[in-house]
Image (cartoon, rainbow, N blue to C red; front, side):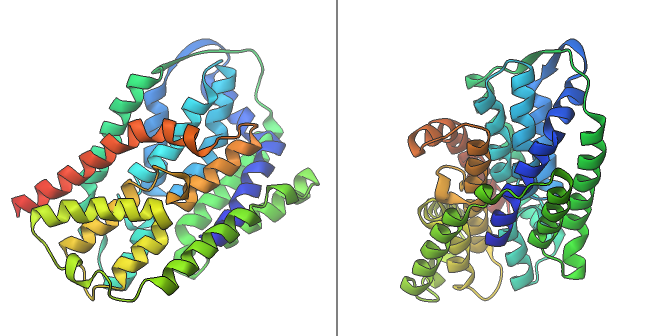
Length: 338
């Protein structure tokens, strides 16, 4: 995850320097005066997260949505927040959607059907309630007036690189190729094309911060700390565990929070399903909650928007809290139905 953070931000910056995002935005909006639905952008981000992974959503859709906003004279921060939200809300749908889920699947030998049957409906609930909260605060249509034509060179080269990246993300794990290796290879290709090395875009400080926190948590929290709570499987405990997991993820980052849980049980149970959902769906509340959030902040900074913690939470909390609550309620209902 840290390696992808270091390679992912330069990837977005290089694609932007090529003109890829601007060209795709023009292509999607179409020339002339047209109205576009923001809901379609919400669905696209949800599908990208679920079918590919949350990092793809952040790296590729955040700068794209900023360009769409600028071409339609809309609030760039409001549109750019959509990938941020869906990188959390839709990241529990499939094992591939989030590294946290992949860790659980591999550690406890859980199949894809089990993930869908336990977390599919909570994911859908979070995404739908998130949209209802989002639309109350932001416009739901775009009035686009586009006069320019897309840059064909940027579309061809950038499209080929992005296509290769997506294939690498999907098929790479089957051949032992990590996502960060795919992103780094794309970086090298784009650096040769644009003849520039984006040293300033490499988020070394952010990576060191997360590493320090994760190391501190590993040292301070003994293995098996949550053994007793995670073996409680009644409906009330499931809800409380999901809430606790979300709170811990926002305090120390979702990956260390997940590992505290996985180190406390030997097999998958309802307590662990609740813990996994909590660290996924609620991790968007504060910047530290997930590396995807920090990746988003770095990309936004590259777009000329510096967002402090207070402003960040002003964007996320009103939408993410109801969405996370809806997901947890659905998981509790599933437990009660069994």
